[in-house]
Length: 458
Image (cartoon, one colour):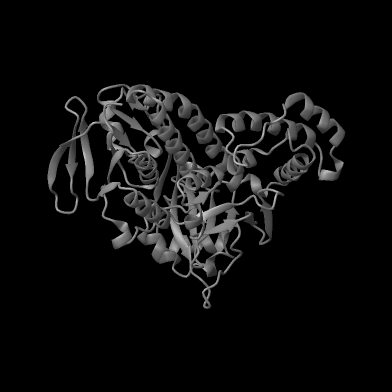
């Protein structure tokens, strides 16, 4: 490498982690962040679905030496607490393996831990530095301070775009090369609400669970925070129908209260600021971003949401971005030049991002509708039993994605085979005792090869 200097646009989760990893290898790294230092002035509310930290993300934090610091600010979730429409609740564990859990963590706290560690490793972080555009011919950034409206330019050697789904770095790259960029809106949006602690500072509902109120075409979820609160997220279509409410009709204090009275009555008394939060917080966009190209020669590369933004329903956006960081850090250390490192990074990570993007879309249907379907619940119970009987061959897709580091594409393909097998076994059945487990064993031996030691359990 001719240069040992790297500029990263975006000091969010991926940018901060990558900066830390590179700095520890001896790179001279600077982070540019458009916002103020939120460790000092506080983090924005209303726009951040709580993060679900799984094995992939934990592995990255482990390598960065931050796992315990982050877990000290996280709450363990062992499964889904499903609030059915008839008032009943049902706990659906993620796994029968006790140590399998995901962790609910506040985006702001995690970002602060990463930034502190990056600065301690020698990374320079420049706030109020918004990238407006990039001149890749002259290797020059056009920057804006949104606080005082000052504008200036600066040169760079190599630029990494970790600047989110609306990436200006990506926009500037697209002026030079066709990235094959396309964005597919989900047609649904979200609003963030909050369940406060009880009067004694404890949790009002079960803390070791991701709570879901599935209602078919829409849903509410709640994730715990260490201070006893829950971050609640309401997901609705942008345009409703006679049977499904949408944000076109649920848009003020009266209509949101009526919605909760009718469809989420057990959640309503838990959210005392329902109307205020609903009005104050914007409706967040949900979309999937696909790119066919992530780099511009050896001058720039994209990662995280800037390269592959996804909907949040598998809780893997951050985990996938952290895997990006580990891969790019490794490839930069191995390559002789930036272009070959960036090309190898794209070749390795793009297929994996496509697989998890698809699984995230599928998981929305599962969370808002299928979790309350008797046929799904039967398949889920049979799935767990088969996993216990055939641990070297039959591993649930959710386990592969969340509790191992099995490549996403492998998990997706194996999951398709397993789903077809479950559908065939459960057709016409109503309880797990009626399943022909001998036939299942034969099908598994025929269709599913033995798995190697799962990555993440080493």
